[in-house]
Image 1 (cartoon, rainbow, N blue to C red):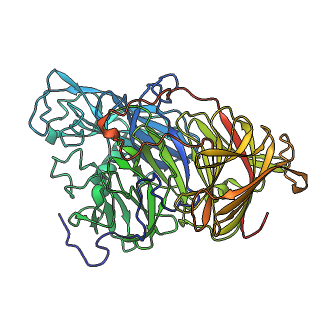
Image 2 (image 1 turned 180 degrees about the vertical axis):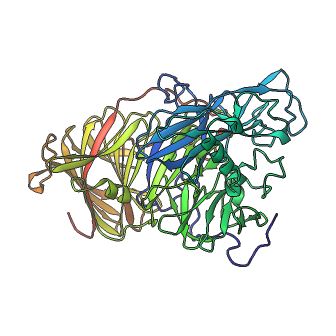
Image 3 (image 1 turned 180 degrees about the horizontal axis):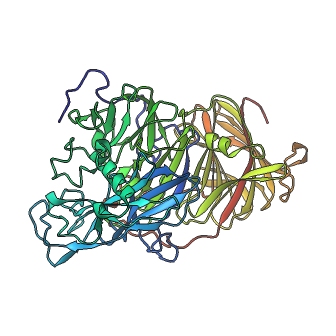
Length: 626
């Protein structure tokens, strides 16, 4: 059922002038302005501290939908490693995409009869029963009547290197999510009869046609009749040649072009298209300009009626970074490449086949509704152990064209999300606080192996004056760090605030004192960068009292000043960053998480004393002297 390719709209072409440098976890790419990232689930081996209460440290394959005024986030989890039981599927719910409830198990671990299994080499499995392994490439489906179905597939992995999506699994299950977010019973919607498992072999759950809820039955029939959506099931059920119109292709995502043609994009840079909603497809063809590997590629139409691809622009499938976006007007030609994540936290827990990096990205499929806002939401896993979500505004911008003056007392949540880049661990937070005539972006974290970040792009300038007002509320370890960077992430200036009350310029790994500050005091940091002669001047002043967060410039009291040479040879700078730690342990390209032997990081389950600080005001403008 293949269509012949036409000369127009026949394939995806990425016209990138810059490629990702994967020595750096953001690829040394420009950062997308307003990309705000929030950790949904932080893996933890201690069941008392883990969000799902099981101590699972393998978490992967997230799916995302917006329904009934909430985000719903489905993912699969396992005890330690990929393809090793027990595994289960969980659901998280959020009203704002920032604050999430605890994961609820929606598809449990099950066992099935071993006798029907005849794997890819015709092998048998010893014993009477065998645990099934959850696996899915598609999660949510909203019906025309507005009912929401969630699904997964039960595969079989007799040993970890036998994939559960090879066609020899058990079958696909589904349940309905009701308006109060309660759940229907679990039912099979397809048995994998071509792989050996039919209704007689599996009696764990019921058959959807036997449900007494005819609305649920009709919803399942509608899903089964949607060729585009069910094409995403091909991998797990590939032996059923009659059901699928497009043989081949892994992890399909699809979007509709302006002409009505639907473009499909798969793993490994493969593409295909259909003119009749999935009844017939063009031959699979590789798009060489989508430089990627075995991580998923997400494509969609954006709310501004343009198009975006989100993926790992690197051929290194073991190190899936950076996570980047490219955009275009017609859905086939894409321009520019911008990083959505500034860094990758280290893999904390040993486990088999844990590719490093931000990966398996999925957004809200066009068969489901999206929030009515000019933004895109994407879900992904990090190191196959943590689950994250990122929101970025459209149109996608990677530069700031005008001067910046952000007073947090006047800032709205919408303005903050459009202009600041936030990176917020689950063991941490970032919140815009208003109090009478004052305001602050308050940030904190207590994660030993992650850090909260706030980043602001400003005009790309050779000479810039930056003024930022901050307050350090709690700091018992590490160093709160202020950075001024160029577009590639080179640090022109590093200012650290230490627990002993010393503010220092860090140059060449040495802390050079600027002043002594008081914990809780509002500070104004005034920075002048001169790239032409590679020099800086930093002045730190006390600005009012801590209780009232007073910021009148007439009350400034200078407590220290220092000048010197920049830490890097940069032509210009464009980025201000403030983080809760000086750095994170860096797992380089030499570290391979797939082998399952990287070991656990020490005390990864033990929260640290919280680090708390706030940004009250930020300004960046060209050419002024202090």
